[in-house]
Length: 301
Image (cartoon, rainbow, N blue to C red; front, side):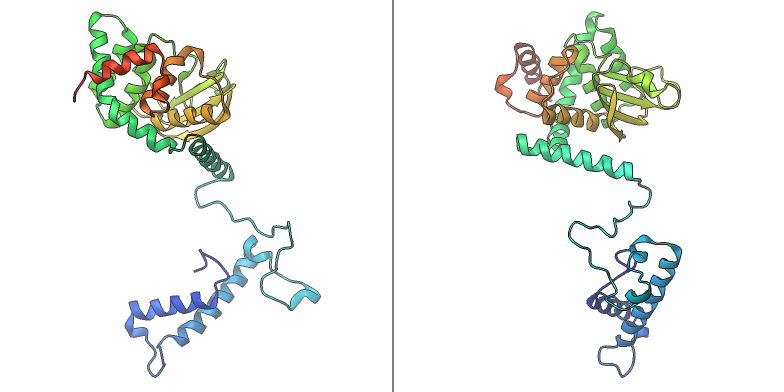
């Protein structure tokens, strides 16, 4: 009870006492109308004593209601005045204030994107990516048969070592700019999470993703992603992503919500994600994006 609120109401005590005797019938009080009135009062006294211990230990949610001197008598909970906050709940266990602010920003981006486009950001992006990833990988495979696009071939070689659904998603996304003859080095960067300094890794990044990994990485992309950060003007605006697809979606959402222009180095890749993957105004796609979309339609999986 105290984890939910140190100040339960009367009905809450009754619900807990009733549930107690229903789960353990041997605790039911003989001769009592409902069999749990004694437990009802016992819980009230126990929680009152527990509140005193919390106050002595410095718990802010309880200590804020402590009165001194002439204020000793009165309602057990102080009523906040207009514009006044007596107590702000602590973050959940294992999370800090920075983590909660990060979650709030992610929710804000998703809500703003939904307001502008009327679709859910993550759901539409991941569903569209899962639908197109197998065909994209086949198109990439066909493009590497001519001994060109070595970077694209290196990405596909990573799947031969570990061909999971998550890595297929990553390969489909990271291979897209190479297939479209774009240079993603200033937009998508990888760094050792414990090696390089953050400032050095973000140097010159106006907009993009920073993919962190642990240990040595000799492949086109790491086997396990440690952390992914969304960077805007050499500043991390969102981080703690554990997968590349979700961070790609949030980057696209930030671009859309803040009305930024797509990076010129990956203009067609972002347009493909918008027009084909998320199906936002697909009739306005450029000729290059139309071309890859028509190729995908020829592959019936």
